[in-house]
Length: 315
Image (tube, one colour):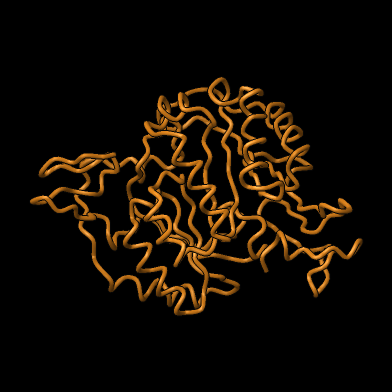
């Protein structure tokens, strides 16, 4: 719980107590607007090869020492005052005009701290016939998460570690609420993919990683899409980058239990393509952010074994 005294902001830096009422200082304020491949979110099983208009604001409810976007997420004493609804209409118009665009992605900083803005834009996006994507740390209370199910169609949740000690020491938060959020998203039927950043010496214990994979299989299902991402030094963390051998080892461990595991922030000859879980043929081939749907027929079947792929890829 974040208790904010009069005249102060909370950990997120963008909610202020004014006479007992919490104000969202970043409502209508955007730090970034950019068209991205949907694979960059990363979402590999949600309209592969499409574009999504990505937007971000400021602030975060975590304090990750290794934050990749700390310039906008870890704001302190920045004079923010939102501009209101007038900016949202032009965003939706931009999304509609963008070739191959499927909708809007709320990303870059933590969209949970821009909860009201995400809801308001999300409704406008739906009215325009487009989709909403949230890239989040998943540290959210159950009730607001259930409300977000009304507007968010797909989630990528960053599962940063799998011990309370890691979450407490390196993110100033807790693991439990993130696990609960993941289970809730899965039960909601919304599209879900999970990202796990592997940091040398901090969350690369093989025993704990195996526990995480077993939990994912038990609570979220074998067909959960997992992205294993390589860490690079950022913000307050100077630990050297994740060795490629660590990524490869964890990839092989995860592949035994999960049908869909990918490697991120790492150029390899494997770990990017989507393969059929029945016959192992390549369904979607990737090189960087270049995507080719090569093994799926027009009726969304595997060209080799004819397995229906709509069960695990959204088109």
